[in-house]
Length: 319
Ligand SMILES: [Zn+2]
Image (cartoon, rainbow, N blue to C red; front, top):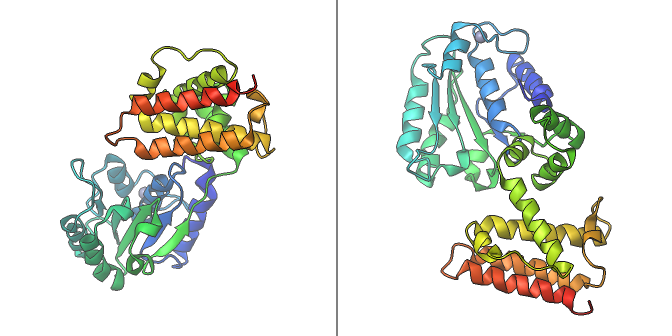
């Protein structure tokens, strides 16, 4: 297991497997970006490995090599096809019939359904029979960020394994090792934004999403201090409307929290003190409304322009 915060989980899964305590349909769930897929892959490797090394898959047997190559004949995967948005009944039926065959290599066959919440109703119904009549030879591994979207009939027949983000120091340590060239502040910020989900934070840090978010903050602070908005801001934000509203809402909430002493660091100190808490709350509300209108027929640049004027007026009042 290459993700250190999942090491204990993976060892525990290996032990449960050996002690035959693991149900035949584990459902791995938890927030996005914490490594559920990695753990599911690890578990599948452990189930199919021909010569486990203690609790770990050996990595060198025929089964491990085929898994690594993505060509294991006893692994069946149900995922959302590229041109679709759902896992349909045909996909699940194929998976279930594959599981009924005799294993080609070892003792087991495994079906992986990910993300399980994307099965449509017919697909979920087709899965029920396999879930109700587990065979000693076959396993089903389900992975989802949203277990609440799965039918209760499916959920109740799985063994639910809740995964949580690691502690902050552990997440930060791992993130620093992945991108040692990045400022510590940026890494902390990324973890703040992702609820300590390390893989999601890494994506944010490595892409340009975080830089964009910091630009949004700079513009809001400048405006509050009476400095002008750079030309074309509303247009630039409307080109990535949802993301821009998310950032605006994030920063306004961050400043509100700072004033109430709920967040550490610069908090509300970046803004002039005379703006009222109620004004900030209204601005935050406005950002949420803006977000709900993103991708509708309403022109995004006009919404941003209006919001920016209101933001400016909060600080102009007594300034
Ligand atoms: Zn192996």
